[in-house]
Length: 473
Image (tube, rainbow, N blue to C red):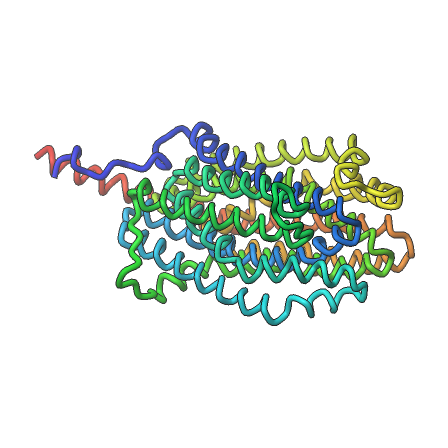
């Protein structure tokens, strides 16, 4: 067979790294920023109802985080397996990863359908006895859980496009869902244009409609534009070997993100002991910080398939250059975020109709927590590298160390001082611990997984030379 008949190399193995990373990450960063925008818009409109309404949405956040953790964690596993399979030219394995990933999205939805129906109201009753917060939170949570099929479908179809380097299409689906959500928010919350006034429930309905539209568009784009994989619904049977490979990377990622839900739930309990306003501030912080973190996550979404592909192709130099450039970009983005939080905390809180008490609590909170941002930029990128190389367990260790071993206990101990402002220092303290663990993990993974790629490149070169010699003969 002549060289011209060999399957064309994917751009992840040939394009200059900086150009490739930007071309794959920038669409995801833009779409992630829009995602962050509609999360903030939700809370801005809800805050105009009342502070209790804002607190209710904040208390619902751990469950929403858990839902997202399942979807995105599974997506990370799909992304890593599919990209690696393409790098190894195992196209049938790539198709199995895609189709079993869709199956797992359906199973995830059914799980949260049950969770929503059984536990939505109890979840708020475990946290507070304020009736207004319980009722408002229940009306919001029951909708986002029982109608979460759109969210899971949108995530998996986005990951399939990211895995094959088609991040522009992935961005399109995210933008579509986000823009629809933003448009519907005021209409459904306040009853505009003849629609019923749904209050907090309107924010939830707007969210699930946006997600469902994003899912439908994602399915269409994968079927019509993503020619590197083939989606087969008819005659599909789950492949447990493929599912195991997906979750080998995905489960540590799911657990890692779920730990964030546990941390948020625990910290909400600590803050409620001071005042429900502190919980509202914490919820606002999470919405605001998403503007800073989401672009870094978008950067990671562009980085992961490049790292996985070049790991499968045994190209150490391209892999390491991708990681190094990603760290530089990640830390730079977080430095911008740090500057904004330090200079404009009062203005940022003002977006949420903040009361005087909320301003007094929120300004020192934002200034203190944001000190952790630069450390977090490094840790987020390195953690994604672990996952891309199939070492999700390493990311899990770092996350457990940061959020459960350091952050929550430190926050609890600092709360015993009786000074609410001291509690926020748990974040930079925990992030410093995370940096130390990430550096240790990086050294371990580099020695175990990346250094051996040099010998693999030598073998591939020899094999290529043999093929070249035989074809010339």
